[in-house]
Length: 130
Image 1 (cartoon, helix red, strand yellow):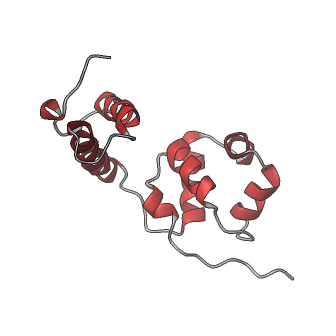
Image 2 (cartoon, rainbow, N blue to C red; image 1 turned 180 degrees about the vertical axis):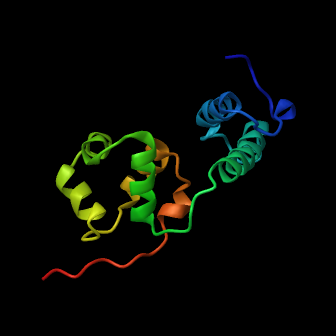
């Protein structure tokens, strides 16, 4: 990949732009505060968030319902999520509102299902065990 600088970024308008920005962010995520790389990283955070917000006109639903909608959009099932997370039993509990999403799940499912993480951290009621 060519050497990018924060001076040549622009609004992200395609999936290719988005992928390029994500890849560059991954290279810069440990940049020292105050450095040009850190400034570029912070710019990328805003560009990526703006693209995601424009792209994902998602309904106002609880995090579990959002996961289910996106699973259907991508043709995924609980096994697909278990491969990403590593525990099918836990996935089943989450999808059935018997266990809350963990921070690790939020991170992994945000990436896998292309859902902004802030949408997955919303509180939602769990079903009581009988």
